[in-house]
Image 1 (cartoon, rainbow, N blue to C red):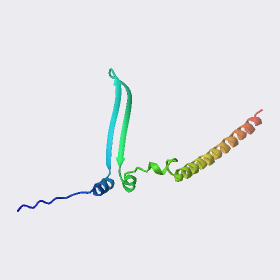
Image 2: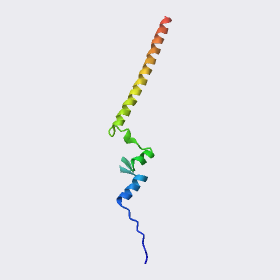
Image 3: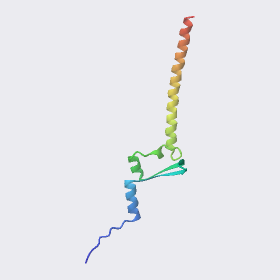
Image 4: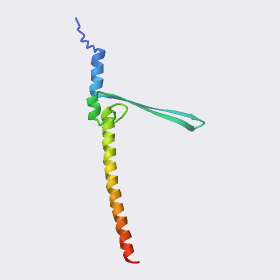
Length: 108
């Protein structure tokens, strides 16, 4: 008698393997007339677990204001920092201009 070892995978097993390793599906669609390209659509689909996505450097959902409130906080902090730096630069420029005006008045 011959025994056949059959290994069956359930959909859960397959999905677990896909999420653990990740799958990339990429494709381009081009529409053209008479060798003139009118439209190109680039499609990229990555199926992976959140941990795997972070591992490969994909964490865009953490900074998208439509998906998380943390992104709004991050954006607000970045804007506050930029505003502070711009105020410092403005003060430095104003001081420099006022010193130049004072010094140019000495030569009159």
